Length: 339
Image 1 (cartoon, rainbow, N blue to C red):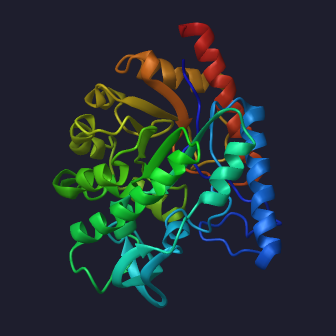
Image 2: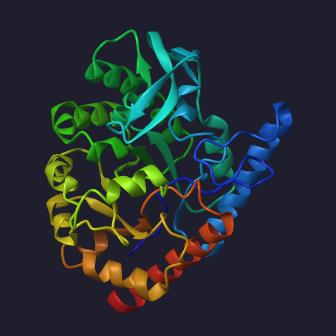
């Protein structure tokens, strides 16, 4: 009960990449970089195990960015043709590559890190992939001309890699869809369908991560405009409840999402965000257990997986490690109280 996990990303060591950045530059090249990525992945797994995390990840140590780490392996994208794009409905701007032709994978995307992680942990292993809607919102398009069509094209590629990851021994595959609480009507029209295509035929457990974003200024400023209650999830939870995805990751610690909305996810496992990634204050086990207790009013305890609100890639590494410890300790406390 109360199996713990994280949203996926963890900070990269300073010897691997720039720190405290969402799009860090690598500090090495060639084989030295490949070796450093492997070393960082193993350290990341060990840190999670030491903290008592039950479902570990590779920490996305081999990816510069959670979306573009996948796109680098896709043909039909021109990385030299970059344009400025307003991401998440113009919440912030970034220079992004452009889709210029039919999309297909060059080969396996994450075989090295998935197989490395599987070989070095006996715990359940989760692997994260960007969701099709979020990819569409993070790239320019000069070929498909329609967001839904582009999403389905990416969903096919994601499914190809997801099936291979499952064959590598991955226990859970999570699709990251922060765009889901920005384009709510599109989620209902075609977002869930694209998600289903990405997860088609997977025998392993599946999850979707939806959140209010990393703890960066653009996201914090946006949250300040959302009022006393954040009710974006109200528009999409019913669609997700009807979906074929097994688990939904939700931001809960220090968020203004009404906990009662969780009942709209009836029948789904809830990866409950009990760790705030937007502030450096480290939660206490008591605080973590308190959020779990509140969620239990609306979700069966057997369906709650304590988690982080979002990825921790831009955070200070020491702070992230302390928050992992708090996550593990808080879940243990909750088991003692509510088992």
